[in-house]
Length: 247
Image (cartoon, rainbow, N blue to C red; front, side):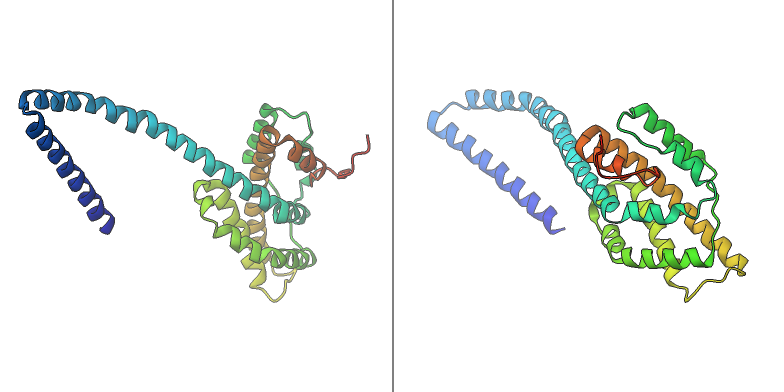
């Protein structure tokens, strides 16, 4: 409300200033006809000015602002996978009964094309990722997720991610799994209902993370080849991975 009042006062003052200048012009040059002519001429040009400012300049500024936001988001996504995402993926894949099939599809290499990334995303969207839990595995995962919890909270609080719905949904799925694990004092293999519930949470988090990881790799491939090269060598779905370049 205060901003609206301030804007109105500014417009009013500028309008009064304009009237004052025209009045001075009439008094000094004693030519109301010429002043009226120039006023009408200014009004005739006004729609073109509005078009230039609102349409052309407005679109340019919006496009530039969107580009800047996307850059900030890409930095956040890169930070997530560098600090936590890759470790979490590695921790979750041990629960997948069909991990070998997934690993074959996600054996990302340096020569992958945009079409290959698209095929990988489509595969993951339709994939039936089968999850099987054991108490021992869940204890290990709980320790991992507890170590990442503070980082996940900071990520969720990042306002830049409001522009990236799918990534935010993934973070919430991962954070929910973390809370489910930390809410339990222990795990029992014979508690079938609880194991089924946790399997569903793991499946949701794992699938959304896989899709975001492929999109993240696609982005690096296009925008940051040097970062992409490192991430290919760190690929959690390649058993012979090594960050060291041997040939």
